[in-house]
Amino acid sequence: MTNEEQAITDEVEVLKYKTTKQKIWNVAKLVLKIGVTTVLLVWVFSKVDINSVKYRLLHPKYWLMYGAAILCFFFSMIVSAWRLLSFFKSIGLNLNPKYNLRLYFLGMFYNILLPGGIGGDGYKMYLINKTYKIPVKRVFWAVMFDRLSGLWAIALIATVFVFLIPQISSYSWLAFAAFLVISLVYYFVVHRFFRDYTKYFFQAHGKALILQSLQLLTIACVILSQPDFYQAGFHGEFSPYLLSFLISGFAILIPTAGGAGAREAFFTVMAKVFPMKPDLAVLLATSFYLISLIVAFLGLYYVIRPSRLHDGFT
Image (cartoon, rainbow, N blue to C red; front, top):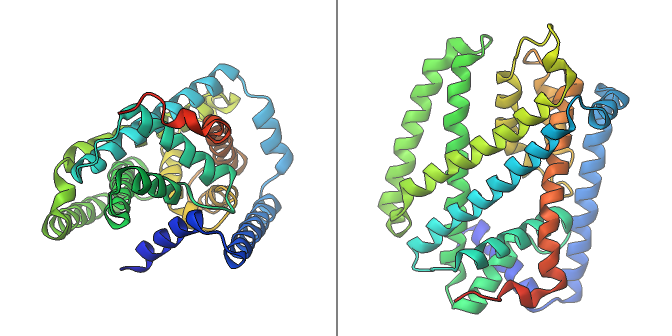
């Protein structure tokens, strides 16, 4: 069993038997995440004017665009749950789509709003293992390939953006060649060693592209809410912001409280690399976190009324 599999298995066991040691470890993880988040945010706002970011957040030119951003993100989460179903179907786990979506929002709630406890993926694995008796290892790999499909989609779209940004366009064909090689190796490894998970492989990766496109639309809507876009000095320079957002997805691997602070720090660094306004760049990261927070609250309903999680599925 790999380290990652063991970590997920341990999380499942935490749900079954919460010892004093495990409770202390959960508290320690929460303290660590809050500490890392605090350090990152203090560093970010030592580089970027917090009042400028606050003003942008509270005084957009068009509030309607924030509503559109929330809708785009909400639909991206529906697509994300739909994508996960493809990998579940590959292992013979035919979840009711409604149940899968409820479970997805519940897991999202745990990931963002309860960062010190059991992770959302671990909780989903526990419930699926308990209800359907599917081995944790098989569910783990379904979730893992679901994540990898997302990384593949990010890499593909990022490669396209390399062609569009003058500062790095000279590396465009190198980036394309690297993406092509990595994609071929990726598919060969999956097909050779994890063939069960390739039954809906291309379908799932198509869904991953839709998901990432919707999240890019989320960021585009936030940009469109700002007065900069309607001023002559902006010139419609979307690409650096969108590429930075795509790459910032890797920043959430940093242990923070619900992901807060990680994207902001990454955008602050990238604002020195690309022609981006630092306060607007940080606003995008903060807005995306707040939007994900709003959508994650949908999972609270199933925490308060857990019986509703199972109602109506077969």
